[in-house]
Image 1 (cartoon, rainbow, N blue to C red):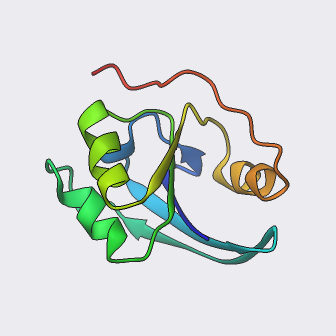
Image 2: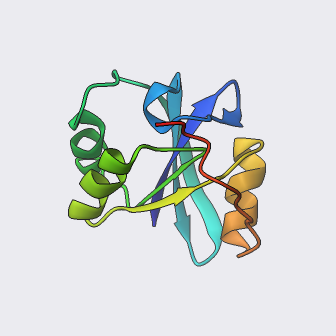
Length: 109
């Protein structure tokens, strides 16, 4: 499974499209196989779902995301996990163990 986590300064960003970078992580059998950070190529309507789909992302994690973005990811069979907060490495570790808890969508639009 390939996960894209919206990231700002090592923390899960509040808004998926407006983060400074994305942490791309590959998990297999509950273990982190690889992790890389890529710069956010820009927040344009409809662009990020296509950009991340081309990178074979299966799941998006973020503090928040607008409804249109959620729909666009869903159309590409990419799941979204919203209401995620905390240190990216800890979030990925908790997710791999099946212990990640989420809160409310932090996106205000």
